[in-house]
Image 1 (cartoon, rainbow, N blue to C red):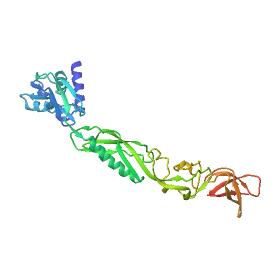
Image 2 (image 1 turned 60 degrees about the vertical axis):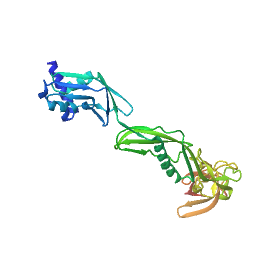
Image 3 (image 1 turned 180 degrees about the horizontal axis):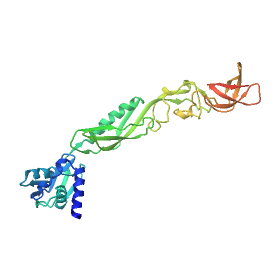
Image 4 (image 1 turned 180 degrees about the vertical axis):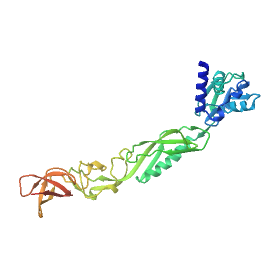
Length: 331
């Protein structure tokens, strides 16, 4: 009873997970097999078949064909080796011949080493092609781009098939002098592996360099700077290109003479600073009065700040509605 239950479970398992051609029927229950095991095998597909490993002979051609087409396992990754013994292969054969009591005669090697046929993707060629793509992408943002591999890329071993690869997105807003680039490599449109190519990056762009020391709160114009083409490789995410600067502007952090202007050193457009003289609009229903006031806090459009009207010693809370303009309602 136990033996019958084991056979039934085996039949159920292989009926689900094997192709119809791999399930051998009871008509072969007593036919003999002769299997000659090779010492080495190289497979070209995604799977290892029994015919890749052994020479199969039998008086029953249908049995012979069925055993040859049995799938033994997945092909190993290129550069790796799988090993199968006679005992392991015989167990696979008997578990798939449902039931099988025939004799299996072995000859040849006691075990076999299986490798996958492969091809080489040139590391130098891949690195050069990636370099040109990345360079083209960065040139849209920087005036000058230099890229050189930080170290040679090793050749990539791949299975036989059509090779394709795709770059993962590069965060062009957060770059440093060492740039790693990830590449996904596929064979026959199936992802196979990822490789990393690292480049030494040198970026130049047109920036503002201060003619003089600029203190916090100073209103600056283009004439306060010299436009220069500078290496920004290690500060690319912090520097503000000339094209992004709107003048006049207000200094938010002190800038020293000869220093490249950074993003966090200029105020946002529309900011009001403490000490600024601003236009104060006082409204009450349909009545509006305009006067001047001094800002007592920093703020941006849409924020509330304290201001002191020129005609009063008491500060009021006002809404910044535009650069240099604040408003108080219900006065």
